[in-house]
Length: 217
Image (tube, rainbow, N blue to C red; front, top):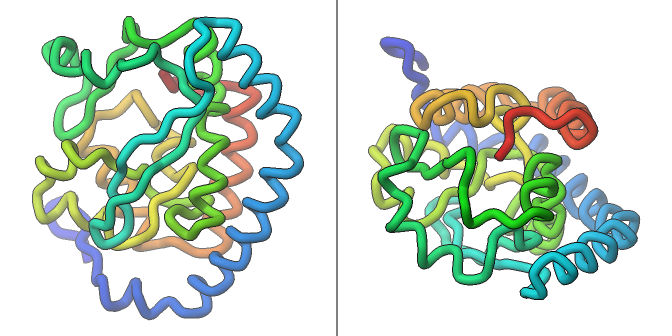
């Protein structure tokens, strides 16, 4: 259902997509296992690069909100300096995105290696473990921070009707070139029209983003 340019999702209908959800979960398990094995050399190279860059921890975990508002720890390669979260309040006035999300193109907290792995989305690879655990999917909306969800309207909370993903329609299209409201609408469009075919197209575009970076920062 769409009204005044906004998309409204029938949660009950989404939950009844049994065939799609089963196929998607099977694929997530197989893909995450294969990914963790095949990408192990990349994990090693990135780990060494991060250590040589500033000597801090290789991995970073952060509380995120998943399906139906459940909190989980999301894993990433650390792309910011240690204790970067403590500096967020000082930078809020420089936020370049309207709404319940923080984005800053020249964020001073990002390390040299971090800038590269964020641009290529390599920092997201450890989330394959979250996929294996069932906390995330390969494809889905970006998992928000608790402080972001605290600012959500009921309309925005429709993003939480499905499992969050490592990549998604917003990430492979407009990404940082749009604001929060546009991101929400893109995610809701995905939820309303999601299918195995759409997921496949998003995954193909994700591979392209890794080799030909988009507006990520």
